[in-house]
Structure formats: C-alpha cells, structure tokens
Image (cartoon, rainbow, N blue to C red; front, side):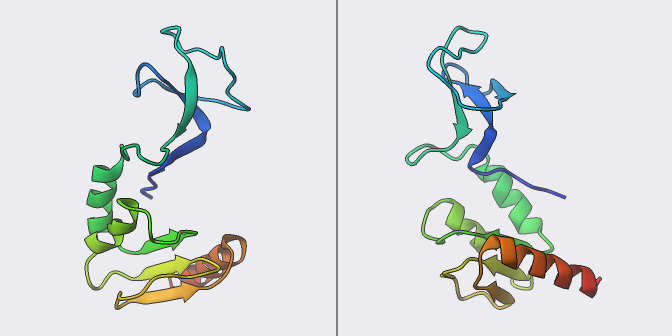
Length: 130
C-alpha cells in the first residue's frame, strides 16, 4: 500500500535548479536536456553524500507498518539502514538478499537469495497465510 522510493526512481528526472521539479523520463539524460527553467536535468536518484528527501516520511510509515520487507541491501548505508529501528517489536521483518547481513530482530525471516527468487517465495507465503 505505502511504497516510498527512498533513493529516487530511475525513470524520472529532476531539475538541477529546483529539486521539486520532477518528471517522468525514458532513456538517458544527456547534456542539454533542460527543465522549464533552462537548467540541466539529472536522474531523480539520491547519490552518496546527498540528503534522503523521503526519510522522515519513511520513518513515519515504518513505525506504523504491519510488516517490513527489506530487499537487496547490505544494511550498512545510513540513514536508510536505520529504518528498521522504527518498527515495533512485534512487526515481522522479511529480508531478501543473497548475502544477508541482518540480525537482532525478534520476528525475522531471511531469504538468502536473489530478489528474483526470494520475492516470489515471500509473496506466495504471505498470500497463503491470508
């Protein structure tokens, strides 16, 4: 229901002049691809060292989550890796990664697999439980 693209979206571009000016974009962004302010466009992603604009919203949603699904991360890059600290103790956590690096959560189920394998397994299990 609530999906946040915490680190942006590859199929969107944003202005280098106005971070709130975001648009759908297919293909590569080239020098000379400008926004309406005649400024260069860039991918709508968060690069290392940049602030994560959706972090506060992500913390709010994580605190209210019925389940938390984490896919494909080393759990080493903050602030995103710290979101797990906002769930309640009884919230089930599902972690999908070929080299899992997570622990310390009471209700944790790990799928030590690629997302293309682990996600369908998890979806099947969740649907069977409901």
